[in-house]
Image 1 (spheres, helix red, strand yellow):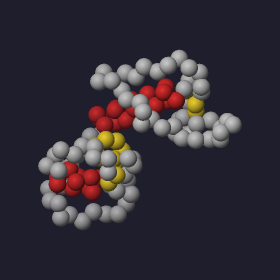
Image 2 (cartoon, helix red, strand yellow):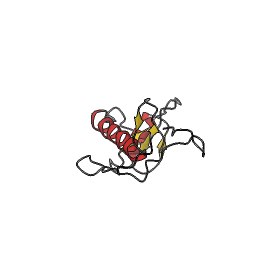
Image 3 (cartoon, one colour):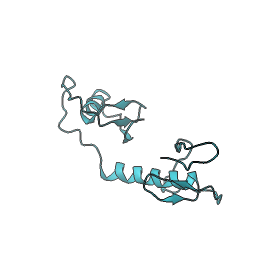
Image 4 (tube, helix red, strand yellow):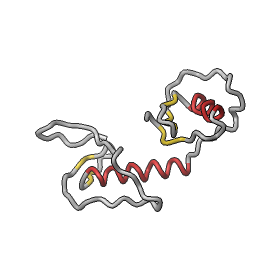
Length: 118
């Protein structure tokens, strides 16, 4: 998500250093360094923006679980449309088909980290 332009220019927020607690909370400092999200909302700081992103990802993972029940063989041919899925192994799979084949090969140990690139 873009950060505001300033002396250093525009950038992207990196949320990799932030993690939600098991209850879905993330305590952010009360530092006012506003950042603008791609949702056109100005957040008080990067942590607040990342909390919103992480909560949205948690919601999507819970309610949009990837159903791989139609993928029962690992020798399937997948189409090449690019709809990236980030696996719990840190690998970006090109689409649902490639992700589900990897889940099957992992005997179910692979899970979806989030939609999009890792």
